[in-house]
Image (cartoon, rainbow, N blue to C red):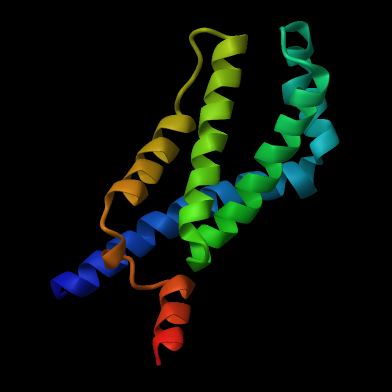
Length: 142
């Protein structure tokens, strides 16, 4: 495989894999479990902390919607930069929350996502050729 194609395939793989992980988590929160049940199961205990209830509810909705929508956007490669920023904030919020509730917590779900996300921030954007953003950019230049 030529280098350009290999780089494009590699970056697409990282972006699509991370997108699928987030999309499916957000989809599950919104449509399988439901955000209200997600709140009851995973966020209710935060009411015992210093955090206001409105912020806890907002976080439950933010993480659910951002994971699903931005996961989808990563898969197709649309508004990638914004999706990456929102997902980075999501991971920081989730990490803070887990750490607040349990000082030593299981990182097995956060670390792989963080590594893939960091890779997408650090790899040259010119390598990411298989996406809708590039398609629209090429059409606009013609």
